[in-house]
Image 1 (cartoon, rainbow, N blue to C red):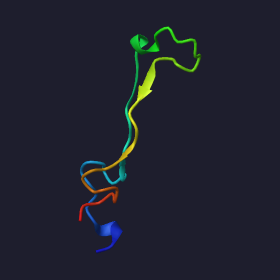
Image 2: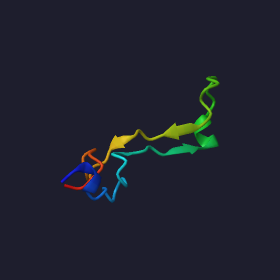
Image 3: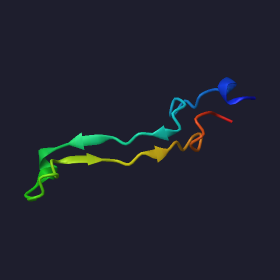
Length: 58
């Protein structure tokens, strides 16, 4: 079976990774003097656990 005919992974829709989620909150900005710390926090991208980063179901 070729990669084109395989069923895309339902968890990541064939993208191979699950993108991180970013959130902004004024609570997280705190009293830091760092201008880059604007309260934006992101979870890291990770390989899809269902298809193990392949993008399709085996």
